[in-house]
Image (cartoon, rainbow, N blue to C red; front, side, top):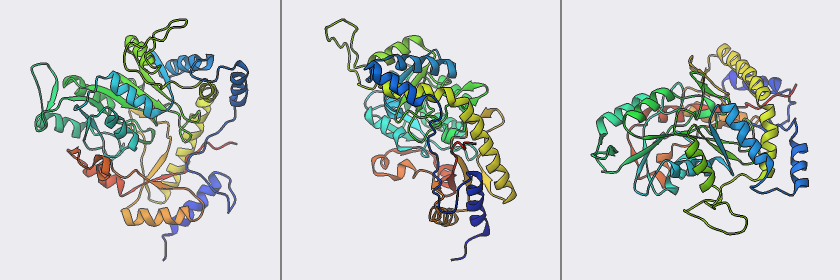
Length: 388
């Protein structure tokens, strides 16, 4: 098969960008431990406090709250745990419905299923790959009503729509201010999936702070990592205290007695992971600066080759966690994926849309036209920090 010339030029540029030789594998996004990670982990081991109680857990929470501007941050074992706990705190009950986008990582949908609730899918915007405020408004206007208790009800199913979970895809802020206004108007709790967007802002506000609750992830492939790890952020201090309580098995403090006053979850971040996170937070400004320079380099390459690319909106600032290009169709996408990966340059498509997969195939899809269009075209390209 004859491939387009730009396929080889892409591979050559990637190797130049990452100063990698011909047979060196270039990952999509690799972690970098260039600061105090080993030092802080050693301190944790020496302290013997390696589990969910320890100084680094408290420090990580304080620094996350300070960095994002949130009143509270609650560290968890991973981002999925944070999202599940956030939905519980949002009041999602079995049988409720939760709005989300079809184009998202499976954890977003799974967390809703953990609550025995029903996802309802509204479309995404082509320029952000995040939830479309226009699609959301159309659904809420045409398919819902407020009942006598003030709850938003999906007219065709009779179920209460309890929450809305937009995601800031690849770190690109969606039109979150418009989504927040719609949720407020229709009495729906906004829970932001900011798993991919630490360091991203919309109108100067850190992602995750437009909603009643937001969540972050520190998985191994994220902008900063502590192996696993996640966090809930909120500006509601009462809610923040409750979040810490239920993620610590809902145990009431006491020197020796075990008393749990509600169903709780063993979701807290271990001190070992928190030590890594504190060190990574120290590096975050440098990581973000470096990743923006990488994104600029990719934009220049793509512009010179006529390749469409996802970029931040004018009123938003992205962390550019994963850069994403848009190819002409699924056939070109698949040829590009085969070509690059067979030459040790890792690229990947967007996630398969959730409604196509068995756990979500019977859930209500209001709109997915843009999501399908993007699914056929998106390719994520190498976006790691580039050490000098």
